[in-house]
Length: 210
Image (spheres, helix red, strand yellow):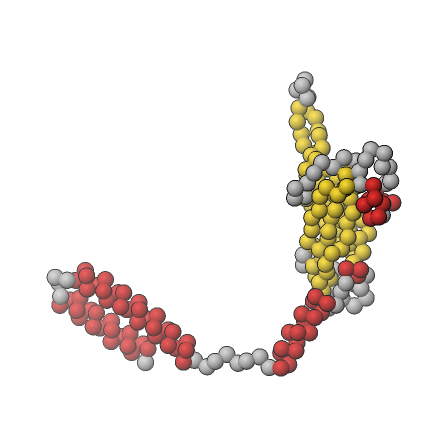
């Protein structure tokens, strides 16, 4: 039925176009607009007249809820271990007064290296969110980074920056490890003298298919 209407309309347009030479240009414009409107109306009417999309069944809804529960509730931050980490200033290249090339640390840009592992026996980690805290410590603070505790940092140092780093779609299977290296900055960072840092797992989601 739709194409019959289009055919009859096309025949009428051709007949009017041939017979009426005085208003040919205006007639063509009016008919073109009318034809476009008719096509849109026919398309919308067919979509409305078509069969409604079937409603999801109780089983499908249950599967969706189970998938979401697994993704966001099956794993805890403690299921992800940070086995290695490093945070150091990147370098900028400049020249000294004699014109020689020198490298200087960039105090506002950092190279972050991490290695995490999945402790879960059942679930594959999909996304992991790390919280990175940057501290400025007094000159006399000599505790090595590897021996630090968060309590010691808070007691002796001042936090000058914090940010979240997302490791997305890493598909980290049980027992496996994932390494990441990237350049990061800290929003509104203050000067970090004798810097130390603390990294912990803030969020983790699981692959719904395990």
